[in-house]
Length: 422
Figure (tube, rainbow, N blue to C red):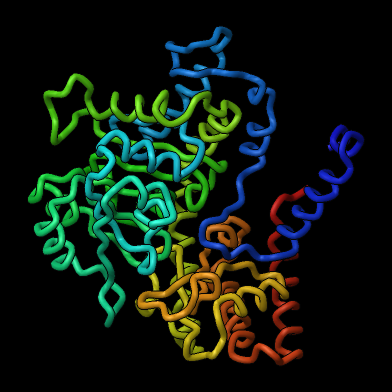
């Protein structure tokens, strides 16, 4: 980065410090991952110079012949990876992908049925401070108070009573498998569209270690980072036909494309789309399936260790990449736990738990995940060591010797598994 160093030393220094932070710490935030050098190279190209409003072959600017190649590759690889009928790879972020999906299926004021934020849903699934809660009539469902699992009988009861336009599955803090088939059956019973936000679990679905929503969902949104291990961005998958409105002039694929452009955003980020294509290509390789399996194995080993250490978990464990600790019994808040782990180089995020009694700014839970540490190369034994160090620290937050031991564990693991080899 010699040009950057010469032009803007402050940004150069900040970037170098962030790279050092990533190298010398363990990223356990469930929504974060580490992209390959090839994805980084695609991101840092002159494709960022280009404007390409429209779609391949139908642009509003000239000079897009090579941009079209990149976007078409991204589309075809996404469709192959998930066995999808249609893919739109232009959304800049998951929130925008969700907005476009809503635009394609609903009108303002229509009912959207989704898991509440307090129980593991996302801001864009109906939070009153978000566009989704402002534009749509939100019908929330929750998790059982005894086991923190989604009660499909209760989902069916609410759906039959409320008759929503869209039923949404897919969450940000739900550590268990999702029954997409039953969700679809409920949607069919009440005449609703079935939408899936698979942002957190897309890589696990691609790897075959989580149930597949593609045979059931009318529309699927996802980010392209997280477990999918691509650049920051998003995409939308859908069936070509509109199941509920087959006689409309536009089919579902056309509605999605129109909702993205011109409905929701203008020019796509061509360098990011090229990087998406690279990441999708990587996910199509056999090694990615092994990676997905290892993510889950690592998470299960950590959950087993937390259980042995007496650290309570929402739902008692995990089936995917994500663990949600409930720190109530430990007398440590989520914010305190996050800061404590930050201080030894373990990065997590505070999170609400079901039936939360504290403020969302300082909740009772701590969310963590294994995608990034699995990319680095950690295996089950490493994750056990890490979970025991975290447990000791959470149970003894003021013990300097335990904090020192945790720092040594982080140093040993980060040196054993560097992010980018020189």
